[in-house]
Length: 386
Image (cartoon, rainbow, N blue to C red):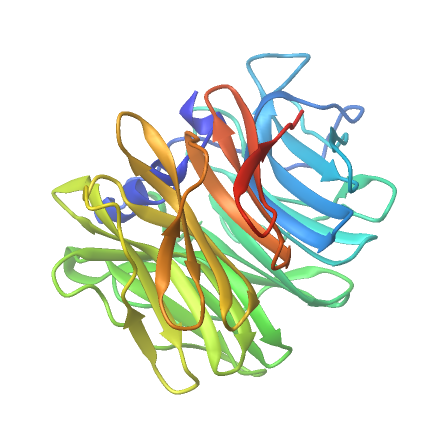
């Protein structure tokens, strides 16, 4: 069930070649009614947030353990010694998918995504919050009959940003969406409207007046990288160099300082989307520049899903490639160049988060269960997960 397990290619490349703007038909009821908290099975992890060495959250979705026709939000927690499943809220007769997470502290964690019923194009935003004791629903600003959130980033307890996409005028989700938490409620905020279809995937924070969101837009049926910036008053589009010959998408962004921001994704052949290369750009405080990153040499679904940073000379980009099956691709920036670092194979690695140079987590999906990998300063290894 692909909708239950959105892998790297399933999550991003189809959106981009959809310059015809046909969305996956999945969809929605508002997450206002719920049963007792439950934990799902056959989990796909889509996001990971590291608060400390003994406090890490991974979120995603899995099959409803009480009703196999449904998909529930999934929450896994690392306490320094093991990963365990933590019950979350769930809706009735729906497919829930949690795509992004971030935290202000141990008792202030956010997870965002969407919820809907199969075969309808009217997904609704779902937001859950961890208060240190339990996960609970928080109302979102539902701006259309079909809207989702894919990424979230925290400035402080009362200053949180989330990004995604929405439907405008019927049809499919084809416009970017940004919502803000002010400590009381979530509200959609005005943003630029690039030509063609546009989608925001992830968001990263430098400070309250320095926030970046990245994704893609498609003017004239050409897929190009998209970056928007918040200066404390308004959002604006900032030009990003595209690949000179291939279509380009940005899937994640990480910010270390106002002059040190990285965004990653893939550049692909629009006629054969599985033919793709890694793609990385860097913001130096004045412009975005394309930075060369090595690929596997196969030009076979090479691409990054995520990027995380410990220091300016210690950055990880994680994604996938295909070689007799989908494999994990991890690359490291040492302050001078990107290089490939071997990692165990997986079907799809979706997100990464760093605690320290010898404590980095990456999460995803492997066949019919979640997969979690850990970097200990020397090598990547698989850590047992529920």
